[in-house]
Image (cartoon, rainbow, N blue to C red; front, side):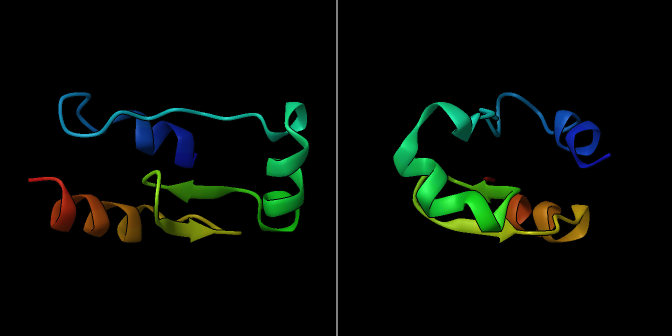
Length: 64
């Protein structure tokens, strides 16, 4: 469900990239118990359970 909600974000505002951590030992070590993890590349926005309201508020405040 969250994937569908994220897909509604405008591509010109936010570029989403899904990463499969199974192919990278370092990513597995860092994120295995925290999946799913939503990051802006340098900051973790949410982990474990993702909710659209928090994501929406983050995007609204950081990508104008």
